[in-house]
Length: 208
Length: 208
Length: 208
Image (cartoon, rainbow over the protein chains, first blue to last red):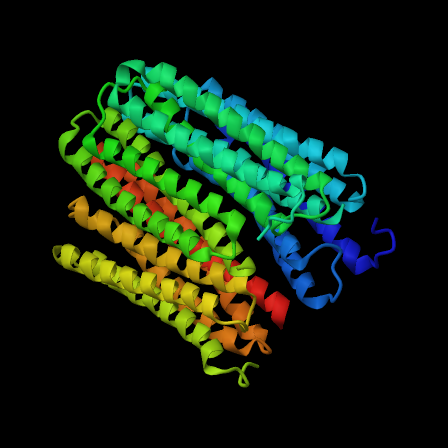
């Protein structure tokens, strides 16, 4: 659809794609972090670097918005989309920093499952964002959005099971509080992916 | 105002109304759940069914948005409104699932009061949504929105009293954590009702 | 830019400025509250009064939106901005009420630092809101928004350090839960300031 656009306008899609790549990398790094807690601190640092990278992309996007007169999609949609993509990385980072800071030495299976759901949801967000460049074929984008919604429901179920198990099995209340918070942050990651899916659905509705 | 609209466009109002009905039913079911905890599990299942019903309505709305060229109100407003109505049911469901999963055997009076405030707020949301079909007479809609705001303040006060009492009287810290979470979810229900009221106020501002 | 506007339209800027002033006053009052807990109850009452004042300003803004035909910026932006400004005061009030209700007798340094960051962020929000009257010169407004974002990152770091320290040093789990909640509410204040900065950035993008 936007084959006729000049380089500056295509730049927005590169920036969205860059931000979505950060999400996938951060989610994968977090999954690795949970699978081997002995390197939690260094992996949390890597995730913090990715988070800063995503911040830089967000700022470049907003500056570009100020410099160009023509944008491929609504200015407000660009602004919303890049901010909400950034939010996802922020929550992965928040979970990673907590695992590291709290000195977590054991994570329940449900947290690992949630980390894996986050990776899958991040990949779908990445696909949906790539699809934005070709809005005349919205079927694939919409399928990604449906899957992101489904993964959020799956994450919600995992959260409930995980927290119910913590109350049954984790006898140390302070550990329970820490692990409950990490599980909730991971579920929030899938929530924020759903927010992005909602924005993308809105863009598709408007332009396709 | 929209008497001249074709069936497909009126369908949006039926879908909003259907989603708002789900909220009222879920809130009433939750109030019953708290008043007799021995049937918590079966009532939580009923609420989960209502939540799925609301999801189906949301998806039908978004699909309809893709099929029709003319919408009675702004496409983005329809999208926002149906998503935020859905959110309310999600939080009632989240509270219900926790009561059931945590095996709660006692709920403080403040939680019951909050459940009742949720029912009243749900009814006001239902009224406001029904009012959308007649935007030339916004006074009634705006009165519903003011009342939803007032109920949110009432819920906030109840939350604070309830949690302060938990800290004073609930000697088991793990029970305190569980009940605090349920009370907070119920207050969030009234928050999300306020979000819907804000969207409706925005629509009224634009179209009346 | 809007020197030619009639009094009613300028009124919107006075209302934004009034709401932003409430934020600064509430944040300063909260900083004082934490520095001398023996007057927590009376200071929490003062903050509650400021919160009611901000509510009144929000309602006046929405009523004005219904009465005027021409608005200096988009109707939806006015509605969003005044609602999100109000949100900030709500979270300062939520933190203040909890300190008072929970009978907090000790606050960690990190909470005091967060309260100070809230004051600085509130001042930047106030500046950015004042800048809206002169959208032809957006550089200053954008600088305020960048600083609000930076303060949110600073607050996030302080939150993590504060909560990690609570887990290490606060041996009473119930006190830990209370203080953790207050610290999280203060970090949310800076989050909500960032929300307002995002809205203002959006307005600047559209009108400058």
